[in-house]
Length: 403
Image (cartoon, rainbow, N blue to C red):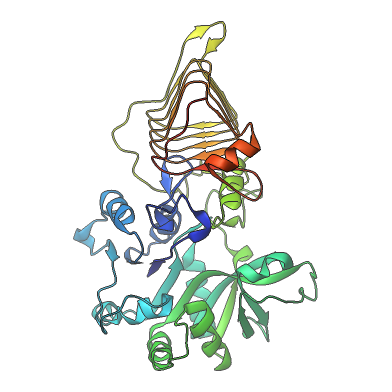
């Protein structure tokens, strides 16, 4: 079960018209492609995606990209809130599962993987399931070390004997670092393996608690920690085929604009920390029927070039210059334009002589000839969204004034 119902407020305006897991990433992909690729590569191919907010774009992507072979009983299915237990929407991630218990009853699994939909990483989930079975845990929580300063963005685990969790706090304001690593705490990745009986029992208990937030991390996991059946899985012990020492254990929460931007800049590094080119554990998606990328004009001052960049199918760099950027399908950079340290999403057009620096430009935006983005911080703040670190973000179809 993939939890894909979050609003993604911190990614606005990229989430103004779509659910967070449907946000484009890395040129060809959507955020949800990463968790689905990990599950499918690991052999888990009966997947339901629980959706809620602004799910149309996500539903379309799932139906067009992830039609697994039904001949073998495989599927990736979008499941919206169906109000099976009353006239109300999902009131939390645990309630989303509780309202879809019928799916569990139909499939009768021994174990259920409940994974988040919007993180960037590679993981072989079979290794986590193997530990879960070996320990006899009721739930196993995937965990990794995160800085103390970021603890208020995670569920924080305290460890007991072996892999058992002794305490779980959801997004605590004050924490102490680990005894062997005072600068870090052990944070939940939002990926869980449940024994089915344990999950059904705790969901029923949580549903009866009117004071509960009905959240997996904030409500369900603490109950299982108190009952002594919650264990942690050390993500750093997970190995996938084709990984390198550099990208082993890579995991990023791209829930803020700055984190989203910085992870893209990691992709275009000469030696990327996260390697999209690992063919042994591919990140899967559908590119569509697009022509190859094209670089045209070889004249003085009008040479189409892209360096230290990722350029997707259908893109045309026509006499412009691209540096350290991600250029998504069907994007167009016209003569004399300069694009640096930026992310251009599908169908973006950069006009002749325009300048774009340190920007994220969403789908179908047209930057007029001569316009300047990321050059004048005061002007940018008046017209567009600007992240705390100064990245200019232009929403889908948003008009851009002429230069």
